[in-house]
Amino acid sequence: MPFLLPLLLQVGFGLNPFQSGLLTFLNTAGAMSMRAWVRHLVRRFGFRAVFVSGVFIISVLMAGFALFEPSTPHILIAAYLFQLRSVALGSDDRHERARLFRCHR
Image (cartoon, rainbow, N blue to C red; front, side, top):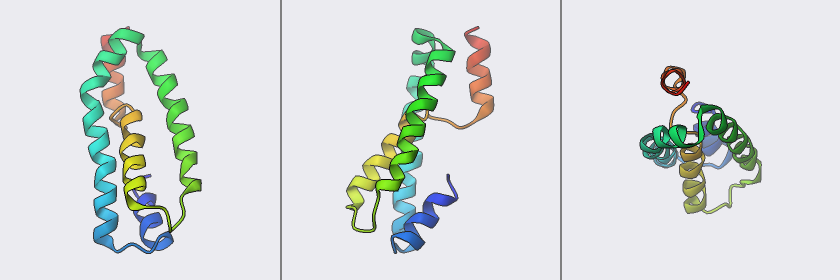
């Protein structure tokens, strides 16, 4: 997704690279904001429940990209991208997931 999102914004929606980068940055900001909460969620609900629910929610949100059009307001795209990565448990790093899983077995 990190490579396809700028492509969608630039080629599909006609944004320049700077505008695309600003929107893509919000994707990363959402991931960083959620990192602080992941450990608490895993301790409370367990790794499997958090992981499975996260995969389900992220799948639904990824399908939501099909609803975007070039006329979609940029603020709505920005909010969606921030929320998308926030729900993605803050990290796509498999080492981080493995560390969380080992800590809460």
